[in-house]
Length: 266
Ligand code: URA
Image (cartoon, rainbow, N blue to C red; front, side, top):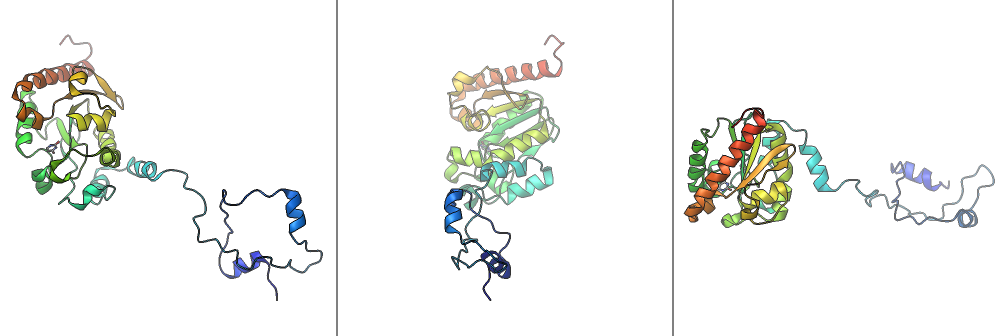
Protein backbone atom coordinates (compact mmCIF):
# COMPACT_ATOMS: atom_id res chain seq x y z
CA UNK A 1 0.00 0.00 0.00
CA UNK A 2 1.35 3.40 -0.87
CA UNK A 3 0.78 6.15 1.73
CA UNK A 4 0.46 9.84 1.14
CA UNK A 5 3.04 12.13 2.74
CA UNK A 6 0.59 13.21 5.42
CA UNK A 7 -0.48 9.65 6.13
CA UNK A 8 3.19 8.70 6.58
CA UNK A 9 3.73 11.51 9.08
CA UNK A 10 0.62 10.50 10.99
CA UNK A 11 1.89 6.89 11.14
CA UNK A 12 5.18 8.16 12.59
CA UNK A 13 3.48 10.42 15.09
CA UNK A 14 4.85 13.58 13.47
CA UNK A 15 1.78 15.78 13.38
CA UNK A 16 0.61 18.43 13.12
CA UNK A 17 2.91 19.23 10.25
CA UNK A 18 4.84 22.47 11.05
CA UNK A 19 6.78 24.33 8.44
CA UNK A 20 9.44 27.01 8.78
CA UNK A 21 7.79 30.22 7.66
CA UNK A 22 11.02 31.60 6.22
CA UNK A 23 12.46 28.38 4.89
CA UNK A 24 9.65 27.54 2.52
CA UNK A 25 9.80 29.80 -0.53
CA UNK A 26 6.44 30.86 -1.76
CA UNK A 27 5.73 28.84 -4.86
CA UNK A 28 3.48 30.45 -7.42
CA UNK A 29 0.17 28.62 -7.70
CA UNK A 30 0.76 27.93 -11.40
CA UNK A 31 4.07 26.14 -10.62
CA UNK A 32 2.39 24.10 -7.92
CA UNK A 33 -0.35 23.10 -10.30
CA UNK A 34 2.14 21.83 -12.84
CA UNK A 35 4.54 20.15 -10.35
CA UNK A 36 2.12 18.37 -8.06
CA UNK A 37 0.66 15.19 -9.34
CA UNK A 38 -3.08 15.55 -9.16
CA UNK A 39 -5.07 12.60 -7.89
CA UNK A 40 -7.80 11.99 -10.37
CA UNK A 41 -9.50 9.14 -8.53
CA UNK A 42 -9.82 7.99 -4.95
CA UNK A 43 -6.26 6.55 -4.85
CA UNK A 44 -3.75 8.61 -2.78
CA UNK A 45 -1.35 10.70 -4.84
CA UNK A 46 2.16 9.21 -5.23
CA UNK A 47 4.73 10.36 -2.65
CA UNK A 48 7.22 12.57 -4.48
CA UNK A 49 9.77 12.83 -1.65
CA UNK A 50 9.67 9.93 0.79
CA UNK A 51 11.80 11.70 3.47
CA UNK A 52 10.54 15.24 3.89
CA UNK A 53 11.11 14.96 7.65
CA UNK A 54 12.50 18.33 8.69
CA UNK A 55 10.37 18.27 11.81
CA UNK A 56 13.43 18.24 14.14
CA UNK A 57 14.50 21.68 12.92
CA UNK A 58 13.32 24.58 15.12
CA UNK A 59 10.03 25.38 13.59
CA UNK A 60 9.08 28.99 14.13
CA UNK A 61 11.43 31.77 15.26
CA UNK A 62 10.84 32.75 18.92
CA UNK A 63 8.47 35.69 19.18
CA UNK A 64 10.40 37.30 22.08
CA UNK A 65 14.12 37.39 22.85
CA UNK A 66 15.38 35.33 25.82
CA UNK A 67 16.14 38.56 27.73
CA UNK A 68 12.59 39.82 27.25
CA UNK A 69 11.20 36.41 28.22
CA UNK A 70 13.36 36.36 31.39
CA UNK A 71 12.14 39.84 32.29
CA UNK A 72 8.54 38.84 31.79
CA UNK A 73 8.92 35.76 33.94
CA UNK A 74 10.41 37.78 36.84
CA UNK A 75 7.91 40.62 36.61
CA UNK A 76 5.20 38.81 38.55
CA UNK A 77 7.28 37.10 41.26
CA UNK A 78 6.66 37.67 44.96
CA UNK A 79 9.60 37.83 47.40
CA UNK A 80 10.06 34.12 48.20
CA UNK A 81 10.09 33.08 44.54
CA UNK A 82 12.23 36.07 43.57
CA UNK A 83 14.76 35.12 46.26
CA UNK A 84 14.82 31.53 45.01
CA UNK A 85 15.29 32.60 41.39
CA UNK A 86 18.16 34.93 42.32
CA UNK A 87 19.80 32.22 44.45
CA UNK A 88 19.68 29.80 41.52
CA UNK A 89 20.36 32.31 38.76
CA UNK A 90 22.82 31.34 36.02
CA UNK A 91 22.05 34.19 33.62
CA UNK A 92 25.63 35.51 33.48
CA UNK A 93 29.15 34.23 34.20
CA UNK A 94 29.23 35.84 37.67
CA UNK A 95 27.37 32.78 38.96
CA UNK A 96 30.46 30.63 38.36
CA UNK A 97 32.54 32.00 41.22
CA UNK A 98 29.97 33.18 43.75
CA UNK A 99 29.55 31.54 47.12
CA UNK A 100 26.01 32.80 47.09
CA UNK A 101 23.88 35.42 45.41
CA UNK A 102 23.12 38.48 47.54
CA UNK A 103 19.58 39.71 46.99
CA UNK A 104 19.40 42.64 49.40
CA UNK A 105 18.52 43.50 52.97
CA UNK A 106 16.14 45.70 54.88
CA UNK A 107 12.65 46.98 55.38
CA UNK A 108 10.29 45.57 52.76
CA UNK A 109 8.15 48.67 53.01
CA UNK A 110 10.87 51.29 52.92
CA UNK A 111 11.01 54.99 52.27
CA UNK A 112 14.62 54.75 51.09
CA UNK A 113 16.24 52.37 48.63
CA UNK A 114 20.04 52.51 48.34
CA UNK A 115 21.56 50.70 45.37
CA UNK A 116 25.26 49.86 45.22
CA UNK A 117 27.40 48.05 42.71
CA UNK A 118 27.76 44.39 43.64
CA UNK A 119 28.80 42.14 46.52
CA UNK A 120 32.44 42.02 47.57
CA UNK A 121 34.18 39.11 49.28
CA UNK A 122 32.59 39.71 52.67
CA UNK A 123 29.12 40.16 51.21
CA UNK A 124 29.58 37.01 49.12
CA UNK A 125 30.50 35.11 52.27
CA UNK A 126 27.73 36.52 54.45
CA UNK A 127 24.93 36.86 51.89
CA UNK A 128 24.20 40.47 52.88
CA UNK A 129 25.08 43.68 51.00
CA UNK A 130 27.50 46.26 52.41
CA UNK A 131 28.89 44.41 55.40
CA UNK A 132 32.57 45.32 54.82
CA UNK A 133 34.39 48.64 55.28
CA UNK A 134 32.24 50.40 52.67
CA UNK A 135 29.21 49.04 54.50
CA UNK A 136 30.34 50.60 57.78
CA UNK A 137 30.54 53.97 56.06
CA UNK A 138 27.12 53.40 54.48
CA UNK A 139 25.69 52.62 57.93
CA UNK A 140 27.15 55.93 59.17
CA UNK A 141 25.58 57.73 56.21
CA UNK A 142 22.23 56.13 57.05
CA UNK A 143 22.59 57.09 60.72
CA UNK A 144 23.14 60.70 59.69
CA UNK A 145 19.69 60.52 58.10
CA UNK A 146 18.18 58.93 61.23
CA UNK A 147 17.61 55.65 59.46
CA UNK A 148 19.20 52.28 59.97
CA UNK A 149 19.62 49.06 58.05
CA UNK A 150 16.25 47.31 58.32
CA UNK A 151 14.32 50.38 59.44
CA UNK A 152 12.78 52.50 56.64
CA UNK A 153 15.56 51.54 54.27
CA UNK A 154 16.37 48.68 51.92
CA UNK A 155 19.84 48.09 50.46
CA UNK A 156 20.43 46.30 47.16
CA UNK A 157 23.04 46.08 44.43
CA UNK A 158 23.12 46.41 40.65
CA UNK A 159 24.39 42.82 40.41
CA UNK A 160 23.62 40.08 42.91
CA UNK A 161 26.78 38.02 42.47
CA UNK A 162 30.34 39.02 43.31
CA UNK A 163 32.43 40.17 40.34
CA UNK A 164 35.78 38.33 40.64
CA UNK A 165 38.51 40.44 42.22
CA UNK A 166 35.87 43.04 43.10
CA UNK A 167 36.04 44.45 39.58
CA UNK A 168 33.25 46.68 38.30
CA UNK A 169 30.41 44.60 36.85
CA UNK A 170 30.23 44.62 33.08
CA UNK A 171 27.29 46.14 31.22
CA UNK A 172 26.06 42.70 30.11
CA UNK A 173 26.19 41.41 33.71
CA UNK A 174 24.15 44.37 34.92
CA UNK A 175 21.71 43.86 32.07
CA UNK A 176 21.30 40.18 33.00
CA UNK A 177 20.56 41.16 36.63
CA UNK A 178 18.32 44.11 35.81
CA UNK A 179 15.02 42.19 35.82
CA UNK A 180 15.69 41.23 39.47
CA UNK A 181 16.48 44.81 40.46
CA UNK A 182 13.42 46.10 38.65
CA UNK A 183 11.25 43.55 40.39
CA UNK A 184 12.73 44.53 43.76
CA UNK A 185 11.90 48.17 43.05
CA UNK A 186 8.35 47.25 42.00
CA UNK A 187 7.81 45.21 45.17
CA UNK A 188 9.45 47.70 47.53
CA UNK A 189 7.77 50.82 46.14
CA UNK A 190 10.35 53.09 47.79
CA UNK A 191 9.70 56.82 48.06
CA UNK A 192 13.24 57.63 46.98
CA UNK A 193 16.13 55.77 45.37
CA UNK A 194 19.76 56.73 46.04
CA UNK A 195 22.25 55.39 43.51
CA UNK A 196 25.70 54.79 44.98
CA UNK A 197 28.32 55.17 42.27
CA UNK A 198 28.56 54.80 38.53
CA UNK A 199 27.57 51.15 38.20
CA UNK A 200 24.25 51.75 39.96
CA UNK A 201 23.67 54.81 37.77
CA UNK A 202 24.34 52.72 34.69
CA UNK A 203 22.08 49.90 35.87
CA UNK A 204 19.09 52.08 36.74
CA UNK A 205 19.36 55.19 34.56
CA UNK A 206 21.42 53.79 31.68
CA UNK A 207 23.58 56.88 31.99
CA UNK A 208 27.37 56.75 31.81
CA UNK A 209 28.08 60.43 32.46
CA UNK A 210 30.38 61.39 35.32
CA UNK A 211 28.89 61.36 38.79
CA UNK A 212 29.99 64.96 39.21
CA UNK A 213 27.72 65.97 36.34
CA UNK A 214 24.74 63.97 37.65
CA UNK A 215 24.83 64.96 41.34
CA UNK A 216 22.23 67.40 42.59
CA UNK A 217 19.66 66.45 39.98
CA UNK A 218 16.40 64.61 40.44
CA UNK A 219 15.86 61.71 38.07
CA UNK A 220 13.00 59.27 38.01
CA UNK A 221 12.58 55.53 37.69
CA UNK A 222 9.11 53.96 37.48
CA UNK A 223 7.64 57.08 39.05
CA UNK A 224 10.12 57.07 41.96
CA UNK A 225 12.53 60.01 42.38
CA UNK A 226 16.18 59.03 41.99
CA UNK A 227 19.28 60.88 43.17
CA UNK A 228 22.93 60.07 42.67
CA UNK A 229 25.91 60.14 44.98
CA UNK A 230 29.36 58.66 45.41
CA UNK A 231 29.91 55.03 46.31
CA UNK A 232 31.06 54.59 49.93
CA UNK A 233 34.16 52.67 48.76
CA UNK A 234 35.13 55.68 46.65
CA UNK A 235 34.55 57.96 49.66
CA UNK A 236 36.91 55.82 51.76
CA UNK A 237 39.65 56.64 49.24
CA UNK A 238 38.62 60.26 48.66
CA UNK A 239 37.75 61.65 52.06
CA UNK A 240 37.23 65.29 50.96
CA UNK A 241 34.30 64.15 48.79
CA UNK A 242 32.43 63.01 51.91
CA UNK A 243 31.16 66.57 52.24
CA UNK A 244 29.70 66.35 48.75
CA UNK A 245 28.06 63.02 49.60
CA UNK A 246 26.50 64.66 52.66
CA UNK A 247 25.12 67.42 50.42
CA UNK A 248 23.66 64.71 48.16
CA UNK A 249 21.98 62.99 51.09
CA UNK A 250 20.44 66.26 52.25
CA UNK A 251 19.21 66.82 48.70
CA UNK A 252 17.74 63.31 48.71
CA UNK A 253 16.02 63.94 52.02
CA UNK A 254 14.51 67.20 50.74
CA UNK A 255 13.30 65.36 47.64
CA UNK A 256 11.75 62.65 49.80
CA UNK A 257 10.01 65.15 52.05
CA UNK A 258 8.66 67.09 49.09
CA UNK A 259 7.23 63.88 47.80
CA UNK A 260 5.76 62.69 51.08
CA UNK A 261 4.35 66.04 52.18
CA UNK A 262 4.51 68.46 49.26
CA UNK A 263 2.53 71.08 51.13
CA UNK A 264 5.00 71.34 54.07
CA UNK A 265 7.69 74.04 53.88
CA UNK A 266 10.89 72.05 54.61
N1 URA B 1 30.01 47.46 47.49
C1 URA B 1 28.81 47.40 46.88
O1 URA B 1 28.55 48.11 45.91
N2 URA B 1 27.91 46.57 47.36
C2 URA B 1 28.14 45.80 48.40
O2 URA B 1 27.26 45.06 48.76
C3 URA B 1 29.40 45.89 49.02
C4 URA B 1 30.32 46.71 48.55
